[in-house]
Length: 433
Ligand SMILES: *[C@@H]1O[C@H](CO)[C@@H](O)[C@H](O)[C@H]1NC(C)=O
Image (tube, rainbow, N blue to C red; front, side, top):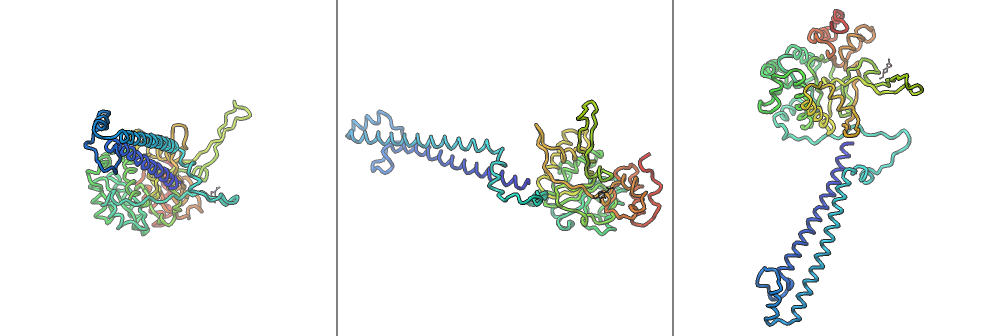
């Protein structure tokens, strides 16, 4: 969709570009006309060139007459001037008309989509039930100049232009260890830690974990070293942009996640954003009709509302498309403007709220991941561990997002799913205490 819109904008701006070139050409013609009229009142191809570049004045004419020129010559000159003036007037008129056209073309720019749509997309709609809109936007052209050093690392580490990315500082070192241990155990090689301090950088280096540390002068980094959780979250969206600009699809991962299978074997890759959900059943994860009751309205007491539990901004896959990058930009700039806001709330609002008066919504395609495969810790501890059948499921990842004792629960998850310790999950309460 956005790709198509880009095409349209381009064709309309080409149109304006052509128009303005025409206008410039005509303007040059008019100016040259004036110059020749004044420099060569006798015409270009007369054998007697003018003696100066002065404007042809009345006294010149008089001199000409007092010199031995005939009055016939003077009237020829006058006729030439009149003809040139007429020509100028005609050119000016054309210039005015073209400017007018250019102006209205620019005014139509806003409506370019509807205006030019028939020219671009002329296929018929097709029979009932056969039409399908595209949700898979084109990738951006990779731009290696954005960050050559990162580009080089990604060339080595990414697989099929895809990579798992986690940001970490030394506050989360223990969780990071469980995180990469589970990833390696599954056999995933395309993952990268963005180290936010030196300690994590050398920790990763000494444990053979692919790591990337930004240069200290790369701007946003001081947040990463000193910042709290939410400041780091803002940084995350800024850093991710470069991965997408370099042409890579990114699976952004918090470090409080245990990997049990390779997520790249379980992605659909049809949307700009494919995300883990904070929902805990079909309704909350995938959306439902929540009926709001207002008895005072009598006959119309029921108002239907749309609800969905938020996407988890700690685990999502993003294709390198314009809507994806726009989402990152919108979230990052809102987090900068509203420092007290929660990045996950902002992420969801930008992704889901429609355009409305005074606001242009993001038009990104999205997909909710299967909540049994990409499982949050509420689903695990409230439902799955208590159900004999669900206990046998092998999730792809488990995100300990709903619980504060993250490290202990991560280790328990690892014990249960990787080492087969059947009672590893039992000692924990459903929620926090
Ligand atoms: C939830 O949705 C899945 C398909 O997405 C379906 O197979 C399953 O039966 C649903 N579960 C319930 C409890 O409705």
